Length: 105
Image (cartoon, rainbow, N blue to C red):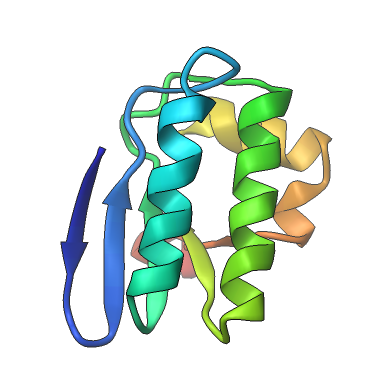
């Protein structure tokens, strides 16, 4: 998982799995990014191939932690498979999902 920073946002590359086997590694890094950065926290999900309920919980927990710190968690480049999971669970109504430029027409 990589973190890139600029004055207005941090971009975190979440990796290819966000599930029960990886959350022990990913959760602390996301929380550290929230606690030590400023501006928006952008989670790049472009490489995400697998997400389960535990991974969804990490995203919701990070969203809440960011909100408490006066920041926003933004999900960027969400793969269609993951977007379907967010829609089915209605988390797309809770979490901020950045739409591709072409999708706004």
